[in-house]
Length: 295
Image (cartoon, rainbow, N blue to C red):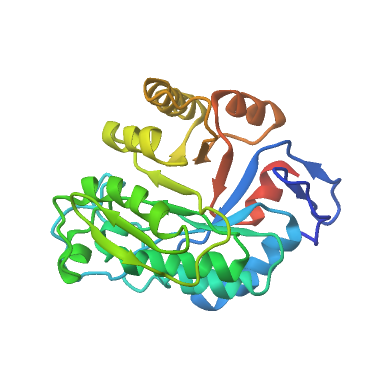
């Protein structure tokens, strides 16, 4: 079992396990996925990760589990969701607010939040409030989604979700800025309004997805990209694709986060190779695996 670790320098992770030497993992940021965590464990998990020196928690997002799905789940060969119908999907921003209240340095984000399935102002209010409450320890990862039922129930058009997500990235930047804000685009039209509270610092906005359109959206418009889980060779391939698209967009000199799960065994050499390819964060789905895999 992990014991509380010393606080890490920004951008580093220090993990200590009972009976093992202190492990320093360079500049790589380590994120823990909260997917399928029972709702009564989130606050405890956040405290634990904060004390262990991990970088942050990323929350998944679904609002419903339909009895019948119109489209197959795209990340499983049989098209069936990998979670049970009773799996917990708590509201990301309410849960982040609760977790931020019991932590000091841990960051929070989403992997990924289905923004186009919701009203733009609802997304803005939720993200901005969580960022303000947490002391700017929030980033948002957005995705187009695949479950048509979520869009239909909330009367959000499914077929335009990609274009609306791209516009939402820019709209959120404007609407979270504070003061009198507005946005006028092809899909969203917000007159001058004030939306309070607002964050005192910009909220990083990342986007997910593996298609060429998704990678291009991240490279052209977002502050970073969130992938799924890969073996090392495929990870380098995906990172090279993102870098090529960023170069085409003339954005190689801008800060850019790249986060993904890595299925290869952890080592200092692995981290160095992935950092060289542009990876800034590794996502794992259980805290104990950091110690088991590395310490």
